[in-house]
Image (cartoon, rainbow, N blue to C red; front, side):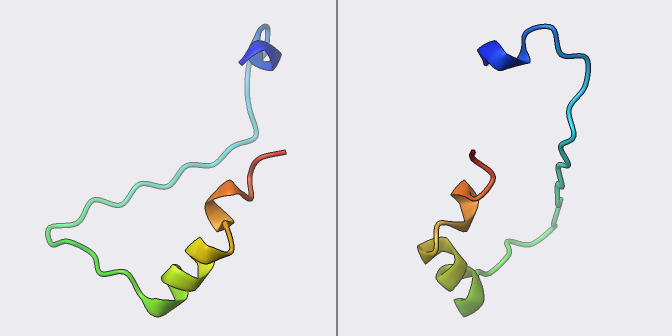
Length: 43
């Protein structure tokens, strides 16, 4: 957070999905989770 002090913009992209029905996780998504894909954006 301290590195963000004084910054006026970022080069980030966020995606939101609004569904009427719950989504089902696929086998591929489970594999990606095991590879720690959610942490891949960390330095």
